[in-house]
Image (cartoon, rainbow, N blue to C red):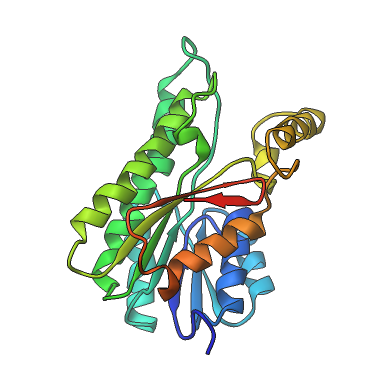
Length: 250
């Protein structure tokens, strides 16, 4: 029997990168159906096509409560339950203190914080004993890098959610954990406004900080998420797993 045999999963922000890699890994490990979400419908449909018939694309914005209602209504009608939620949708944007704008603050808080709240809050009524909620945080939630204060604050909030929601769901046998990747090469870096040369230089610098002398891969994060979603991780709740350069630490 596969590790995730028959499970119903929802993954937000799964157009590409970590979300898409995780969807593939969950299906490879036996998930019966994986619902993937994203704002860009064409990219989302293309991603679902690569995953096969057990993937369902539902376009929507995690920061929009109505979109999340729509997503979970579809899941309820088709599957009746949710076993795994990976709240992965989010983005990064830098701004130094002194140049932080309302648009910068609102954008990051809406997607990275509010989006996680709506995703989990709408999913919980469909989850039963043995359910698993995994939140996507980042090592920046624990470290202080210049110019990244708002992004770091949003990921620190996500770390806190994992701990407090584990307490909120005490007695229901629903686990809540967070993954905190380091630098992972994903298509998202193309949207940060940096040149390819700048991104390449950043990846090279980040690799020197890792014991394996390389940056992480989206497939490595996906495998950690799949483990957290399985019954093998039943001893873990409210925990944070750091993933940096292919090394996972609890």
